[in-house]
Image 1 (cartoon, rainbow, N blue to C red):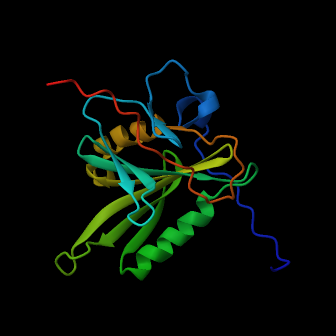
Image 2: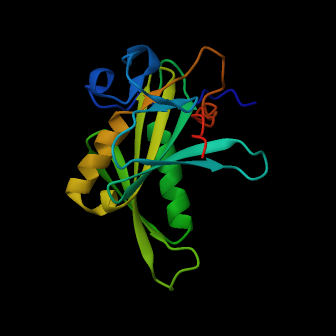
Image 3: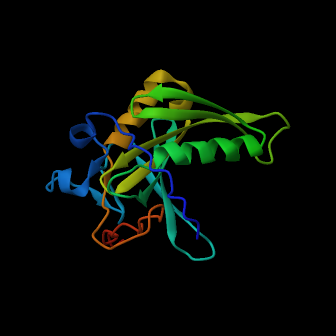
Length: 198
């Protein structure tokens, strides 16, 4: 263990986060019909398709992907310290990973604060073929929510607005269990409605 204290980064979030989202569970309207996925709750909307990404080895849900309006938004909630944020540090790590894969990264100011626009080589695609992805992040109270936008929302402004609105509608459920910063807040399958009998 080194004696050097880890750098504490300021939290990164839009000024209206506590009213416009992404919301903390304590800030959300309890009567809205959210889909409960454990660490996040999602508001259903017309044309929204939800997929859970499952780690093969552990069989745990590691991300939620939302397909909407020609775009995909992948979200992951992480535990974070009460006083400092994770997004400034995580942005640097994402940029390094993308560059190591032969991609290019640009940082810009977005509606949620700093975001990364990455040109990522397509795995197994034609040499030189890339896809654009936007990495967004918001530090909340004791949590950090990361989003990755691909498809139309990464390149078309109007589609981008629709997917940003979807990101804002997410509620993060941190829970009261102590967790080390950067640990993924557990996600789970939504409760299955009873299948109609044929």
